[in-house]
Image 1 (cartoon, helix red, strand yellow):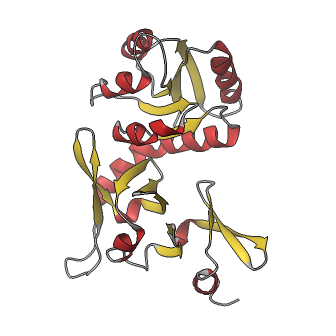
Image 2 (cartoon, rainbow, N blue to C red):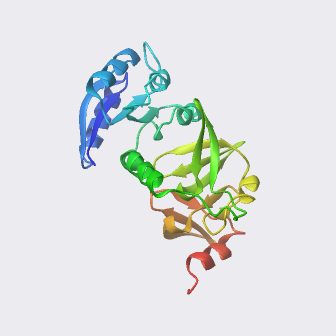
Length: 249
């Protein structure tokens, strides 16, 4: 799926950096750029991009305000780009596909673009196929997550991995991440361990998404996932994780 991309940033060097990176990502066409919130909204309406790389702190209007005001119909995918971590909760509330910190790394950009590219196709496929566990199952088949417009249902079988974030957790799917107020122990009580296994006091992982095991020394390991994420395994979980992933070893 080819993506038409609009870059929005008030720093010319940041725009140039992204343009250079996009030259090395297949099936991506940069169709324009904008340097403030007002012109960004106008460019989105006129050019109808598939994906917008959107800075948050800009003149006229913030990138967060631009994203929040986009209509649901025909809305492009949004990847926020910013130098500040504290905007992350707000970014996920306005349905961002990803959130990149400056200076943007090429590998993270490519991962974010892949996520945005798959977003619509995967969600549509999931809707057609239907999701959910048996009505008799003690495990939850979905997690309801608060967003700016209300709540959304996140099917458990779309979650690749979960990480703790203070009083919240981040539910990572192939299309986006969701910020959800919960504890890891609470999740452990509702998630089927056959789908999402606990690998650390701060993380769950879907075994089918594990592509490799990295040895860190002193008996420690980490799991490399298909989306490029690397998740550390807690020492108390290592034996069970290895037995689960490599039962014949």
